[in-house]
Image (cartoon, rainbow, N blue to C red; front, side, top):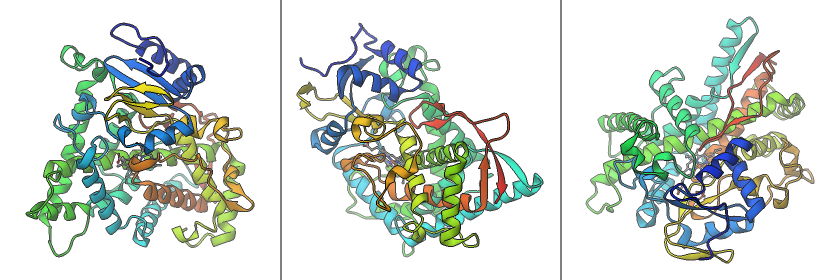
Length: 471
Ligand code: HEM
């Protein structure tokens, strides 16, 4: 029926085995999909278990689907609803009017409590200062140097920059519960991918072998995060003052009291959006930072060039602020390039077609899952990138100015593009600039970091350490 071309579908399993084989061979799902695109073109059709999936790999095709209303749904199968009491809830995996109302509320109130404003910069600077102090203490304890596990060192500091807007609360980097939850999320997102998991491709498996199919663990981890956010909401309720809202949660609680509140608003929905923001907002920025420091550790010349710029523009005695961004051009390019190297290993969130439609001349039936490949847009010479696999911050400088190419879309496109882009870029910029201003990151003799990554929903560098000294 003119469905997009792709690997042959075997009975019951579809192309699951072929996708898995390519993923094992190439080391990542994004490279596996890239290999399929080379063979079948920028729109690849597949079936995995019960799910019909279309991968969209070229910039033109990505732009097209993400701008068309009929592609704008989210899948509503068990993988996406078992996180939230069997119903589509939250903002990541809802659609239609329900999603529009909730997304608009989140954006309005994140802005009200700091997003994009000076208070956001102040908040990140505060977290960056806390991190500098913590690392400084470790260096002193180590007699002038310390070895840090870099891939997972940003978690709680980054969480706090979002959490202050969401709940007006902050957590200590040593908070055992938060660290445990972040550990669970890292584990979770490295074991599932955007196209689902074994239990969603073959739903019957969740009854036959809930452990083996990943179902039990998936639900358990989401329940633990929901318990945590329930505690945060209860804390906000205890000190709630309707005349003095401190955070998005306060504003939501107030909205729930109003007699003309829209039906998409409920206390369960508040828990679900907090869960979604916790998951979408912290692991992503923390791992983008991990990629930044992976490449800075591997490329001392790039690190030195960024440090020289920081010294020349603001010296060593004042922490960088967002106002310095336009003058710290090379650091800004390091940030853009780090986010590119992180995002190219991932995908858009999954979309769902809301009616029968066509893309690139192919027929795509209603309820097909559509996944945009960011690698196809961010890591391909045909998308305008020269030597795309290399970490080269200077690719963003043209005629002495920072210029962002049209195909730089690590935050997606269209109505469903990332709503945390401003916060994410500010976090990566301020932590990179702040840490490089004070410290050198170098390879621990005999333990060089590998560029290999852990493949999952949120890509992660393989665990690595760096030797950290004061400058
Ligand atoms: C470097 C960090 C980040 C990257 C690379 C990133 C990237 C993305 C991408 C590619 C999407 C999918 C867009 C699509 O479906 O087409 C997305 C969606 C989303 N992101 Fe981010 N993100 C980052 C940080 C954040 C932060 C800090 C927040 C929280 C404030 C956040 C919240 C969200 C939400 C809620 C969505 C779903 C939007 C919707 O479906 O309406 N992200 N992000």
